[in-house]
Structures are given as C-alpha cells and as structure tokens.
Image (cartoon, rainbow, N blue to C red; front, side):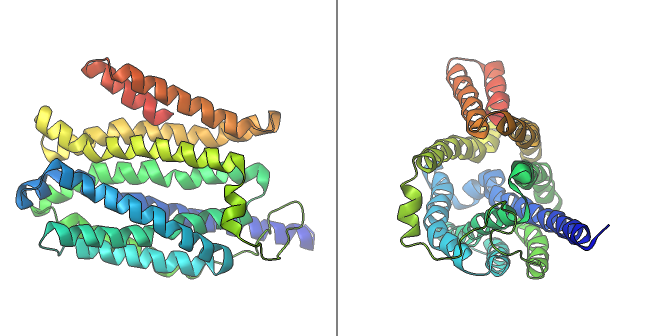
Length: 329
C-alpha cells in the first residue's frame, strides 16, 4: 500500500468513526424531543391542561427550531461545525434536565423552546460535515445511516420512557436520565477531526464567500420544492407522533408504558425499515437516473399521501395500515 492509499484508508476510517458519533448524537436528539409526547397525559393531569396547550408544546418548539436554524446554519457554513454541534448538544441536554425541575406549564414551555434552539444547531452542521466526509457516490448511504438516529431514537424513547415513569413513579425522571448521554456526547464531539470544506468533492470547490447566500439558495427551484416537501411531511409526522400515545391511553385505555411501546412499534419499526432501505435505493437510482434520488423521494411521499387519504375513511385496522405505510414512505 502506497502513501496515498494509506492516507485514503485513514480518512475513510475517520469518516466512519465521525459518522457513528454523529449518528449517536442524532439518536439522542430525537430521543430527547420525543419525551414530552410520551409523558403528555401525566403532565396534562398534573397541571390541568387542555389539548390546545399540549399542542403548544410542539408548536413552540418547532417554530423556534425553524427560526433558529437559519442563523445557526449560517454559523455552520462559516465557523467550526464541531464546536457548534458540541455547544448545541450541551445546551439541549442541559435544558432537558431543567425540564424535569420546572413547576408550571409556561416555564416548561419556555425551557422546551430553549431545547429547540440547541437542537436547531445540530442538523445543519452535521449535514455539512457528512458532505465533506463522504464522496457523492456514498453520501446518500451515509445520510441514510445518519438518519437512522431518527427511528432508533424514537424506538428507544417509546420503549423506555414509559418504563422509566413507572419505575420512578414520576414523569420527570426521563428528563434527568436523557441529559446524561447527551452531555457525554457533547464532550466527544469537540474532539472530532473536522475535514476541510469540499474535501470529498471530485472537483475543486471555491472558498470565496458568496454574497447573500440565503437568497442564492432560495432562488434554486429544487431547493424550494424540497423545503415545501419537508414542511408538509413534518407537519403530518409530528402531529401523529405528538398525540398517538395520549390517543391510545384515552380511547383504547392502555397504560402509559403499553401505549408508548405500541406507538414505538407502529412509528419506529416501519420508519427504521424505510430509512435503512432508503439510502441504498436512492444511491442505486442515482446511478441510473440523474434525478433518481428526487424521484424516489417523490414516489415515497406520494404513497404516504395516498395512505393518509385511505385512513380518513377507514376503521381501526385501516388506521394501522395507514400509519405503517406512512412511516415507510
């Protein structure tokens, strides 16, 4: 093995190590943000809340997350991505623990908004880093593995949060427990060996600063469609995830732990299958069609939309089919 081959092997090994760390942080990202959706009924009963107030928890988090993502994304473009991710992870993990200490709904809401700011720092920096760690023909696969943190984080939350509440007889316990791995990962992320921007590209990337980058990006039609698709997808997904557990508790009279596990199976398992296959299929289609990844995403979203329409006219079994197909899509 010559010097160049040895250097490439070292870089590849570093890329997979960093990806694993990013995956773990992404897993706890979704684990932490899922906790309120699972313990929503105990909170509602303790503070005598309405469903509108419960919905505000997710709405406020999402709005802050979206707004904060723009300046934090700019920071990821211009500054150290590992520092941004490490600080963001420390902030959202620390505030997750604070959520377990609050004594009122409005304080809880404000802290969740702070968690949203911390979590908003992660995705832009992590996606940028993955783009510089992996060449184009492996990037979708790497992103698929990174995004496995989403269903696995959901699964871990849905399968363990109910047990934590039952074991400690308190809805506050999961917030304290969830903060620990996040703070440890924050420390590890600071030791990432960050690649040079554009390091994985086959053509040389310009390092000149772009004037008005947000306007330039928004002028790309494909980007606008991707944003719109992501907006509609997440609107439906987070609505289902936020109220699935309390729905099972109220209308099917399931205990918290059983309702959480059932939701984990419905949402997490099917999502895991979809994301596992998604990156691989997208890479294969991209090799045959220049817009293969976009075609695959479009078809998947179309299937999920048709399943939604079917569920609106179906009974309990139909709803189960819808959720499974929706999650796969």
